[in-house]
Image 1 (cartoon, rainbow, N blue to C red):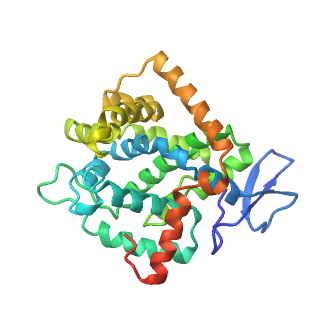
Image 2 (image 1 turned 45 degrees about the vertical axis):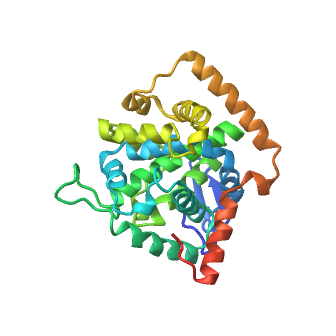
Length: 308
């Protein structure tokens, strides 16, 4: 399934089913489709952009930074204002704005935000003193980050809404390529379909390695040490519990985070409550803060305010 987004937001994808051999193909705008079944992928993406999904944010950061080149790229970054542990408000804004832009913005807005992010990323490259070699413009590393984001949104969607039907899941997967193509990742680097993605994912799990330096940094994120000190006794253990719950076992092992059957039961109960809250929340509240950050981006563009 190789569909291209429209100049607006990707619009609805049209999915055709070949009744002779069972093949399923998504075609943008219905071009070349026979006996089409429409998939309103915009609606599904908006559902996935739930503020409650940010419960998985810490886990996704750990997954991304578990690749040494990504982990050290963030840890050693010379962009001081981009560090979550030192500037949590700004880092949260720029990260969530990127997710909103990649998922919901127009092509022109993506272009403008890419340019702004590039201005920060040009400073993120290894030197002779770096523990590993890295470059924020490396499309292979951007592919890994995009893959983690897709996996994270997929997990959150299943928890909040249940499983997608195969056709919609295919369309959702293809749309998720924008997590990488909004920057330097080429579209043809995104695995062709979900089966190819699983092959890519399993192969790249072998490249996951968290050393003591990065583990300490990530443990601070899992424990929300960036939160106000007064809240640490409550927020720290709670955030660590939720973060560990969202992590695949391979990443828990790398982080040396214990996880029991009892903890899994408690996590599952908590997620059922989150799904219930999400279900009865009006759309404007459900999509917060992503809708706010997209509005803020457009305000900044209109007023000429720096985007990052």
